[in-house]
Amino acid sequence: MIDPKALRENPTKFRQGAADKGVVIDFDRLIALDERRRAVMTDLESRRAEQGRLGKETGPKMGQLKGKLKAAMGAEAAAISAELAELERKPQSLKAQIAALELELASVEPAWRELLMTVPQPPAADVPKGTGAQDNKELRRWNPKGFDSTKSFEAQRGFKPKTHLELVRDLKLADFERGVKMSGTRHYVLTGMGMRLHQAVLRYALDFMADKRGFTPMGVPVIVREECMMGTGFFPFGREQAYHIEESKRGNAHDLFLTGTGEVGLMGLHADEILSASDLPRTYCTLSTCFRREAGASGKDTAGLYRIHQFDKVEQVVVCQALESESRTWHAHMMESVEMILQSLGLPYRLLQCCTGDLGMKNEDMVDIECWMPGRGDDGADGRPTGDWGETHSASRLGDYQCRRLNLRYRDGEGRTQFAYALNNTVIASPRVLIPILEMHQQKDGSVEIPAPLRVHCGGATHLRPA
Image (cartoon, rainbow, N blue to C red):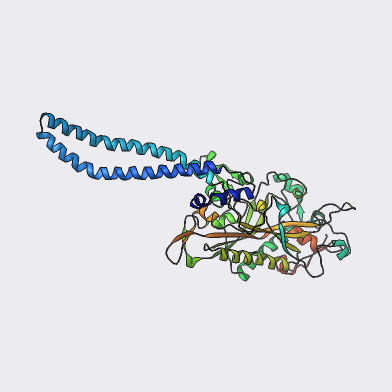
C-alpha cells in the first residue's frame, strides 16, 4: 500500500507511476474520498471532544439548576426549566450528529481504502520505461566454460539436443499422463530419479542459503487467510491466479487461499508487529509447495514442466530498515546468491532489468534471471527448437509497500516507529529448473550428467541413463 500522506503531497508521482505500469486508477475519486474522509474524521473528533466537555460541565450544572427549581416560582421556574431543557437538548443533538458522521465515515472509509489498495507502487526513478517484457534491458550474462549461448548447441556439442520432454520420456523421469488423469492439465508425476533430482536441487539451494549465506530457514504455512494475501500485495491484483478454499460455505469463520510463493508466509510472520532496529535485517528462506492457477496462460509454455499448477520453491526474503541504500545492497546480495548457485550447476543465464510495464503492481524494481534452455524457442529449418531464454528467478525490491499493507514496522535508534523495507527473490524453483539442467547437461549417448553439487542428494549417481 502506498503512503496516503505521500499521495496527498505529490499526487503526480503516483499518477505517473500508475501510467508507467499501464494501470488505470481513478485518482480524482481517490483524492476526493480521502479529503471527505479526513474532513469527516476532523468533524467527528471535534464533536466528540465537545460531547466530552459537555458531559463534564452539564451534570453539575443540571444538579444546581434542579436544586434551584424546587424553590422557584412563576417566571423564574419557567426560565430554569427552559435552561434545563436546553442542557438536555445539546447532548442529544450532538449524539445524533456524531451518529450521522460515524455512519458517513463507515461508508467513505472502506471505499477509500479499497481504492487505495489498488494503487501500484511507483517504479524507482532509474527503472527504464517500457510497456512489457520486450522492453526489458539485459544487464549481463554468464556462460559456463566451453559454451556460448549465442551459438547453437549442436555446433558446440556435436549433436542435436533433445527437449526436456524427450529427455523426461526417455529417462523415465516423469509421468504426465497419470498426472493429468488425477488432477487435470498441467499436472505431472515425478518418478524415480526425476523425483530425486527435483529434491536434490531444492535441498542444495536450501542448504546453500542457510550454510553459505546465513539465511534462517523457516517452514511457513502455504494455506493462508485473505488478509495475508492482501497484506503481501497478491490481492487484489492476482486474485484470479490463486486457488480459493471456501471455508465460509462450510460454516467456518474465514476462507483460505493456497499461496503461489513462500514469500507470502515469510512476510506474514511479522504482520502487525513492531520490531527493533537491532533485530534488522531479518533474512529468511523457506522451501514450500506453491500453487498457481496460471489463468490465461497458453502456448508452448503449457507443455511439460515449464508452466504448471503445483511446484516447489526455495524463496528468500529480507526485511530491512527503510534505507534505499540498504535495500539496493540486499538486492545485489540476493541476486549474487542465485548467480553462485546457477554457476555451480553449470547453467548459462542472463540478468534482465525489468522495465516499468513489466514490474508488477507491488515492485519498485525487479530483475529477472533467465536460464538458457536448448529445447525452447522457435523451430529451425529442421523443425527442432533453436533454443531460447526462459525465466527461472525474479528479484524484487518493494520499498515499504508490502510492509505498509502488513503493518510491519520497526523502532529506530531515536525511538521513532516506521515501516520497514522488504525484498524477495527466488533461490530455485523446481521442476522448472530441471529443464535447463536436463537440456544443458545431456550427453550424446542420451544420458544426462548430474551437476556435481547435486550428486550427494542423488545417491552418489553421476549420470541419469536410459533404462
